[in-house]
Image (cartoon, rainbow, N blue to C red):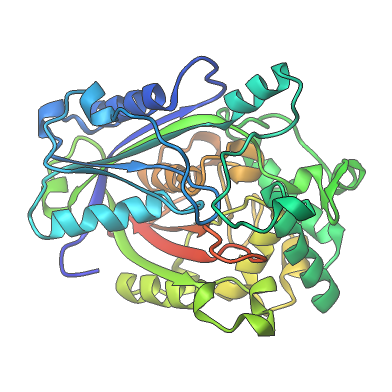
Length: 397
């Protein structure tokens, strides 16, 4: 990032079932909450970015109206952005360009998901699971049974097990510890529902080697936040949360025939860029919100970021390092696995709350530097988590 540093001054979040409410309605309401949280008026918002999730690298069909019109925001620009699970991270990156060049004062980034409601509606028609939009043209998976993300993500977990001896019980340890964090978060879908590794092992196998508790929640919800410059944020109503650094990487930039993309994520470049901008090392992080659509993604990141060596993630997680009382608190709100699934917005919201000191029972003492990660957006198949983003947030202390 350049010389201008950004700060988050407003946050709006909606969780829980939202049957009967469209994504447009949810996005607009979250945006209104963020404006209110920031102590601003609608007339202050002069830029807007909408976060729209897209399965894989393709596009999801969109609605014809924008939350900016619904709220009558006098914006100079509005556009949608998103790739796979990288929503908040890309929203921040896009807003930065306008704020850094003085083309906006306050940029509102907002989006919503109605996946759970759509799944419930599908059940009423006698269908099962999450209904996907049309896959991009030429996509190879459907004819051979690759119908959901769990299908191709499971291959990567299996490859890690075969290569490094990782066990299903070690994946279960990840699920259990993140569930313990969720049990401290009243907004989590799995709040109060403790599990053990034995419960994990007894849960149904969805796609081998993934059990039910290895798989993220299906959720409705919305997220909105307001970005401005660090200087302008000094007068903010809320405690500003600074964007200290960002980096992006993509596994499509490496040689695929070596199959490293089966056991590694595009972390190195993203991590080094973000940490370099923030002027930190791994040991400076007070918590990490790791994208956890499946348990193995957490394990891969524990290794690729450097908390342990490649192949040692299972034992590291099994030691209790990522749960309450562990050496590196991971997904303290319950993550996608046990709180709710709105792509990287889940980790982003929790990171902001920890840095504001508003995380309730799960609040970490003196949290000053927190990372959230984003990934997904497969461009080639078979493949997992092509894009990877690292975003470091902090209090500026």
